[in-house]
Amino acid sequence: MSIKRSIFAVAASFAMVVGAFAQSVPLPSALPLSQNDYVQIIQDGAPSAQSSYARAGIVAGSPIYQNLGTITTGNTFAVNAGVSNVFAQAAGTLAAVTLTAPANPSDGTRLCFISNQITTALTLSANTGQTVTAGGTALGAAHTPLCWTYVLASATWY
Image (tube, rainbow, N blue to C red; front, side, top):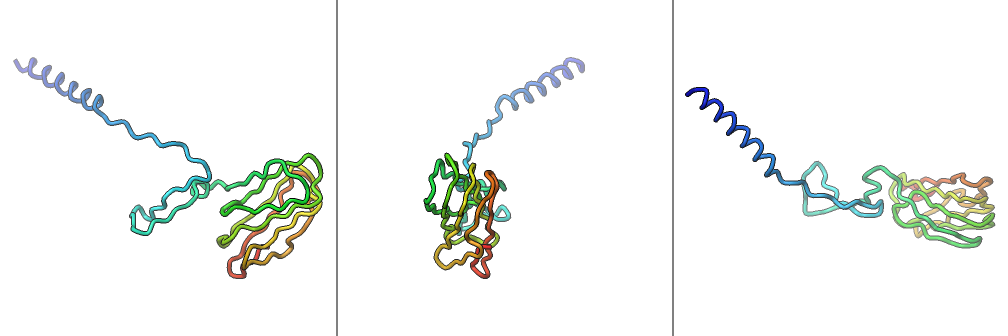
């Protein structure tokens, strides 16, 4: 009789384990995020009434970029907030390109321009309340980035 009870107990335990796995709830699937999507930041895992948000690319540690597409010489482009890399494609040498710095950058924001062609004159134009040192220069080779870093204390791009 004891053997029958043991077999029954093992079978019942097995059925409960299998039943528990069969009833497990699947985890919700998250939609893929693009680098420009915003995610809520919950500091120390404690939600608060004052929500703050950041772009997914920044949270993931990947730089945000702006693709200007195919450009021609003499154009001026406004750089979007949070962008760190600006890419441009051109059919030939760019004699002049002007970038307007993003408004309200944070301390240490880095901004780089990269083109597939030689850029004879690249100018970074300051946004309201900002200054730029060495704002204009030439890129002698294609695919060579030119970068500036923003210092909040002096409101200057270096």
